[in-house]
Image 1 (tube, rainbow, N blue to C red):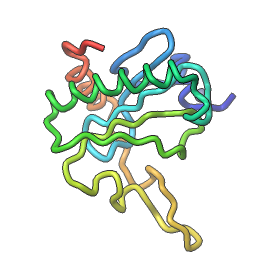
Image 2 (image 1 turned 90 degrees about the horizontal axis):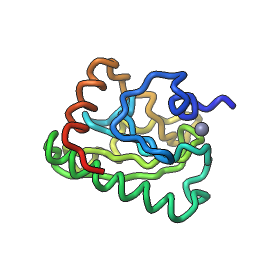
Image 3 (image 1 turned 90 degrees about the vertical axis):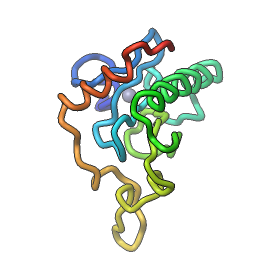
Length: 146
Ligand SMILES: [Zn+2]
């Protein structure tokens, strides 16, 4: 299987982890809108978020909720956004988005026009250097109770 998230779970691809247990992994998004954007995923490869068993989906939300509190406490964004848009990597992911303004989820950095259609993508967002992702993940993890 050629799934980048499964490779991250298997340790074949580097990531900056914020939280991990037997069923869930949370790690820094390589292409965040703002500092501190975290992805929370099931360890099992499940394409559609709506196919995640309810108890696991609930756990993912609870972990994301607690992580978002820590992000607010440490990085002081204006608001916290949460998204499951279903596109990008075909491995269900819940996105925690620290917001600095009201359009951080919907701004043009998250979209491009291709063949007359608006395509939502992270292509316009720069990859953050690993050392910086590791630094921010340590800030979030420090004292995190999940
Ligand atoms: Zn996967």
